[in-house]
Image (cartoon, rainbow, N blue to C red):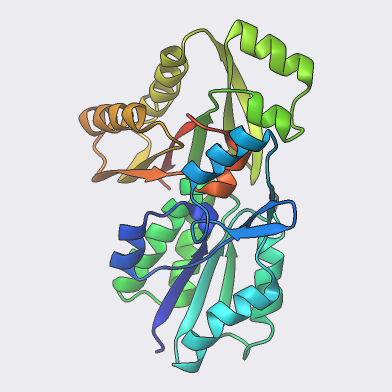
Length: 283
């Protein structure tokens, strides 16, 4: 049986130390300022993105890796005899999945499996972590895909957006919504449902109130959690993320509560101070 090599893309927000430990390869998406296309996490980092948006007053576009990008990334591992499992950003949010399928079709049949996470950020990264551990434990490609298929609808992804400014600049809310939201200190909470970003509810008032609501939503599900991994992901909100991590460690039976930083593509859509909690429920 060939070795199974796990790939993901940069929107999985998997930290560098996890990538190194589990030998996860990443295909970056792009953030595009004018005619300048920058690879997420390679030649632009979130802090640089926020500084540039603040300076220029405009958000970058985001773009999927091309089929050629995937072919270039996959080819060395196919040539050395590995089989590849690529887990992608939700097909409902990007053409990344379709481009990976096009690339896979250029290789011998059965050597590359492309799996749609129907999620984003660490909701998708959580599936990647489960896959690499399953591969390390000797599971076959079929067994890993079966596990991912069962786990995918059980992943809960919820995050608080601190400001409507990035949603406004990205055309996802009107100027009036942005103004009223800012005046009333309204913070939208987003969930991923069926692969799409869906407004779940809004919290008015202090940021702490929104974070506590999100935390309580997770803790209300503690008996249904699979107790494997909980991930807290943030964009320039480390202090709050550490607080949530500590509370989740204290009040759940999770084996690991991991901390991650949102990459440039996720950050460009949600803005600074965004913070989320991701976990899977029991099957």
